[in-house]
Length: 588
Image 1 (cartoon, rainbow, N blue to C red):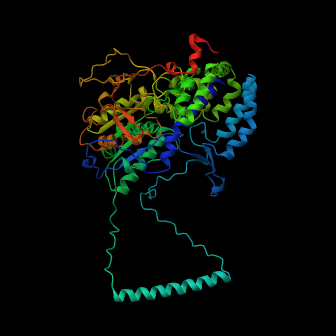
Image 2: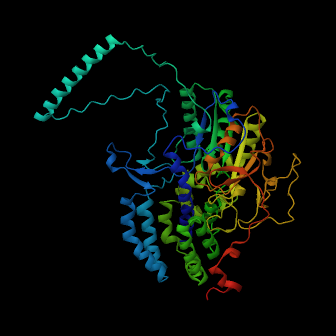
């Protein structure tokens, strides 16, 4: 059961990450908020290099796609009400009764079947392939067939409306009206002939480029990274065909970074065909999951830790600080002050300590436990623990051998060579940028709930190794930069929360404070275009308007980070009702 809770906690985080993916999937041209800057971005030469945008986790998954009748297509991620409500009414009352009475057998009897009823069609086959009839509804064809030839639109047969006496009378009058209008139009042209209009040049197809006009690659996030890299390669071929371009630039967001890293490994780093290797001119990694998502990797590898203070801090951030939600937050703080949060956390921790794996593991491995895309977001440090945690028995090793092979390929080949891929890419004069964000707590159920994040992924992981303070603390008033960089400059943020000198690539890694994971990439339009289209690699020192550390200004644009003389303080110091818990007391 501990393993089931671990995955449920991880999935709750991933559901939060879905916001950006599903929102972006609704439109191929998301609104870009360009940084307030005096630079003339129109001077960038964007001609002939389109941008392919690879988004993150969260494409809607359907079942019933193997039939021609669309009426049986049902969303299973996120689950539709047709799927969710029956399961809620059937299992949630028993689950809650089990929690309140601490009858964990009753909890097991309801939690496992609930997972199976709602999410079984989201899971994959034991070999890591998708279940038949499940997938996303999206079209990456760009109007081309498998041979990259234009697809002829199907001619729809016009519907013949049923004729009756009234429709015949209406048709007669419509015909008379058209003839009368045509007669007067002819007379008008004789009296005052119009200049003929210049017909449009139908053979000329204009394409616009840049991040604002990127080509949006959609994918089934459950698939293994090797398969998705192949699909991305085909999509890039289509973009080149429809634009007539020889090359493309790439931006990757969240889980999309795992896909892009695998693509670069297979079609650049290990590729010998020079034409394929030279497809990509530049790449920007935004809020990347390629180094793992701690809120997934920790729980699923058994490193779970839940405490009431972290839970309260997380809820405060999730609710926001507007007038409509502050009242609700202070009610929660009062519950924390009287010890109710501790009561809830004690129940969860007690439940985690029980050993009911044999009863519930079948449910887990038939839902979220067997998804290759899920394991792509394991950190290199946690991967082996996670595999042992879920697939540690000889029977499971044998049953899920195909899936494990796919997981290990990404971990052993792609993750192990990420720095080599980037080094090689830059050595050939191709531009690279890395963007990370910070200022928010992470989901409060890991081995270290104080880590800095963008509310989904830890800032250290997004930035390839930045040293970060606790989310509500500082590195220290007398903190000194940890590494001496070749540039000889200071990589410590003025708010004393980030030391970028320990990043793998400190001079090409930018940070945005106060940006959440959901849709934050739209704030980086100027910087992304500058990285993608500059004649040579730019660094964090090249533009005063785009320094290494930026901050969200009124949710309108980014400005350089400045220090007003104050620093972050521990969250417990900000509590009002929670101060009644002084000296470790858990109640009034």
